[in-house]
Image: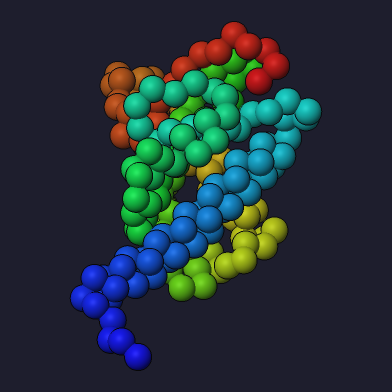
Length: 176
């Protein structure tokens, strides 16, 4: 039997890394998809889609971006680490949307979810309905607090800022 070459040892380590990074991506993508579809149901928008997965940075529109919604999209060799994604959330009856940015890290049998400039919470895997409800409640509270804080600041003579980590866009597409 022949000993492994140094290259074989390196290739084995890289292969192990690749398996772990694929598992990490699959878990986080599943969490993101569950949050996206479940949050829309939680908000009670009826039959209309009111949440989409969108890129966490750069240009976006309120439509599905599939794998392009994740910070690791287009990186080639899939990195192993925290993955961010955006949630486009419809926030008005007239077609206004905002983007929330979430970062997820798989930590053993848990996933840590951080809302940009907001709370961080830890959920046990696999995600259950009660854990998702906690996420939805926190997302909604975060959005409501930002809008109320900005209006309060304005009423007191200050325009505030965009420190919550999301921006607003308008879409005339009524079917979204």
